[in-house]
Length: 252
Image (cartoon, rainbow, N blue to C red):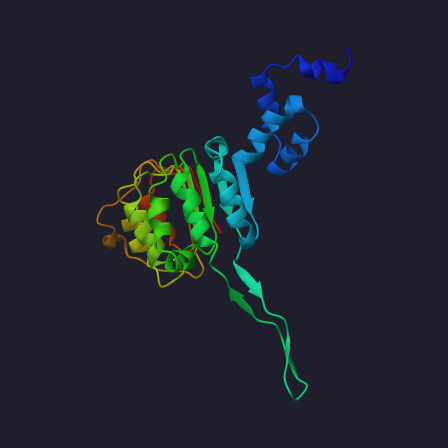
């Protein structure tokens, strides 16, 4: 029996396990090769979605929302786009050409919120430009704070609105990554927002520039469950005090 015939002998669970090693792009390609493997490959492709351009968000949202089965398959959503619109070079009357400049278009945030409101099985959510998007669409913070099964949350560009989101989060993610924290946001306010989240196991606190906070300002707050810490800009002494059981400390 040839290799293709042997594949047909695999039960559905084994096939899904094999397909799970593919990324979404390869899983989509596999969908088109055979009706027999189509369902397993489609489940893999829809489980993890990465958005590189904001203009695709409305289409992706509509695709998932029109079919509850698709929506139930979504486990990981990575919004890594920068929401930028390029404006072409503009010549002046004097013949001088100014370089193109960039504006941001946030209209796609509404469809993103619509999608997040309906997701029940999302485990991982990553959001670029988090602070700016929360400012443009206040509903976004409430819906992220209410994701029922969230295990990993990554926010890039963190400010005061992100801090409020963390204060009101209904579930503690096991892995929390706060990247590119603006320096106007004190590390004390961030740690205070995490006071109720004692089940975090892996934490990243990455500032653009070093910040300072005295140990006596911590009021005894410590996170005993944290095992892995990624940090930049926070004094080592503070990290050692706040996360005494961390077995790995990565200083960027």
